[in-house]
Length: 279
Image (cartoon, rainbow, N blue to C red; front, top):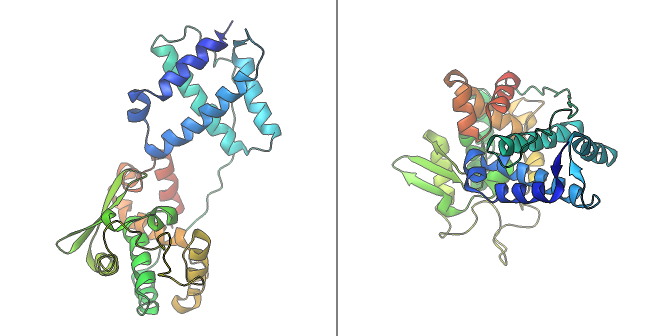
């Protein structure tokens, strides 16, 4: 028993385009699920016409991607995306069969990487080191003050940062979350972002411009080297963007898992991971 291939393709496409899909999932989870379902649709489209989709087909999809070298972590996520989608379709009456029965479970060991947040003294030393580099100072202040990923912070435009008295409201448009930075970190970001006209990137060079030198141009990889160069100054053997994010998480520790999840724009399982990893 199973579900007709054409019917399943149609209801999955309709579901991905629906308001339910857009509202029930966080932006990052929604994009990952959309990509996983696209791969699944591509796989079943390659099956012979008239094939009924059942747990054997689902396991075949996972086996195919395992042969392609996909990690167990990614396979577990794809399996979960497909299972959750099919469960939703069955609950809403769009398909009759529970074809996830017999889907092989995937387990993997998630390595817990511990990150020690900066102390107040180490943070002061870091900003003292870059006091003559306002861009780096503003960048570090944003990473520490928002817990944002490097890609999120480097993607900020001037309209994403709004002055509110002595605070700065930062909006990450891709993850649809706002964070308010206060204190010295807010001033470091505001002083730098307000140098540039509205609508342009804050930390990266706009297309066709040469505001930053080629050697000083920022990227995810460069961020690691920029911080690595300052390990000796502040007396830390490990200093990377993840440590700055851990510093933000450490300050939210007493607020609980939900607040950490909302602040970082992640689900609660990932929030628990971060709380366990910050020591």
